[in-house]
Image (tube, rainbow, N blue to C red):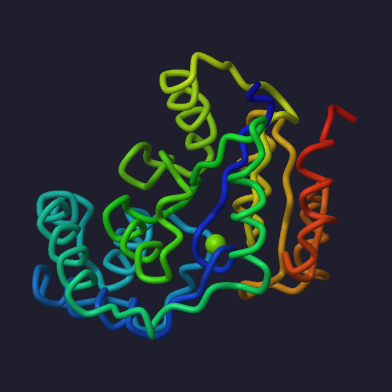
Length: 233
Ligand SMILES: [Mg+2]
């Protein structure tokens, strides 16, 4: 019987994508808006793709109205360019991820899903390249809500639609590499597992008080135990 909803972030948590992601974004925004603003250097960590579009273009002096007007075209352009350009060699899985996903997918009490700032189509492509997309039947993406803090509720609703199981509190586990993953877990009283495989160290993540903090997800048994035995505390 399903007991745990385990929601994984993508970038910095499951995998990392090399500079192709940033260069594709710069090219797509330049094609549609005539400028990529601060996309070449902007901090993307833990942010929604949609929010990143606005932040980098506002910094170039574009108005919100103009950004919104061309947003769908820019999104399509970015996704299309990313799917055409990104290869398996551009993506690296984080330590322990294949083993952890293999184990979790074999647990009858675990429902695996995604909770990510990626648009669904580009996010799915990132997972297809290293062949881990099949582990995630659904997810909450940047397409689903304007802010990351709204995504846990979206994921819980999708899980209910799919399984008829309503997940609450610490039976929802959110695994991510930034303060934004920790913050969105708090919104639904989920258990947050922070991992320092992205751009933030354990010291930096600790300041945001995740329930659990790991250097990496390499110790499969330890992480699995934490997920399966999580309870309200
Ligand atoms: Mg991340």
